[in-house]
Length: 412
Image 1 (cartoon, rainbow, N blue to C red):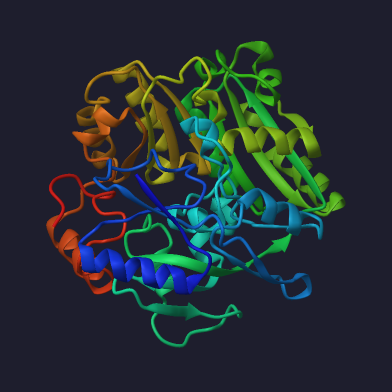
Image 2: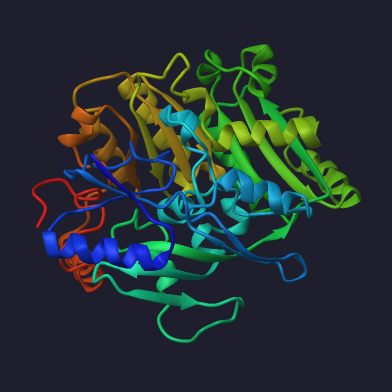
């Protein structure tokens, strides 16, 4: 396979134009941590962006950072952490789940658009992307947005690029909003709740005035392969429901006390603080109970987004009908489902149950042969699919960029 390692946006333009002239599709790669997500692509040329790793500017007082797309996410997070700041949407690291190396890049973070547990409060990656430079499938550079939150000039292409999985343009540079890191963190833990009851607790907590930033539920079955911080939670062999509060220490402690009283009818709440709490939420964000090197490493994993109020019943049904394990995040709005291996990854069951609940599902982890014969991403209704195709063609008419990654069947 030919690997084309570019040095700057000009190189990207030249590579894309050459690919157009030769009708040669390109696979866009940073560190490759997410290469196993999506339909297998038929290409023998890789556009490697890892050398585009400069931090152009970081203005802590203005809460913005401008960085090239190939910059390692871990390095950028360390940089802003040194100034007591963070990406509030808490981007997940897919490497443990997929068994890939490296923690990904800034460009991959935007291209995938996968947010962590704080999504219910802070929004997603798209809400924190202020501006971007990219190269379209015409081989032309363009920029969108700027360096201020209220930049409303022209079309908001940032929203289109986020979560497009590299099928619209090659992102070369981004400007992102950063936020102060909370001074203190408290997590309330309730044990022994069933999925539906836990869903009610999370809904009540998120609807309370106590500014809950994350809410998750882990059934007891997911702890069988758990280690690290999650092993401590599993000490009693029960399910756990987790509610996170963040802010200045006095505020976090006061709100935790008030929330404890609110949920007292569902059981006594334990309190976990600061570093241990952070470690637990990082493990949930990165879905470590389903990690590739764990007991369920060979099981396909689905990422399901649904109305939060439907989450408990949906997850419970899927676990019962498939024999799988589930994890609930976003107050029940995000379900991670690891299912026993079958040739079709139990796609028919997952799709029918999820669609009935008003949600959508993505097959995040499965063998290449399984992904080749399934719709990895949620199939769209005909009208929406036609609109999405018109958008894609307006950016990449010859389907050069990540051809076939998001759609099964012959590429056109």
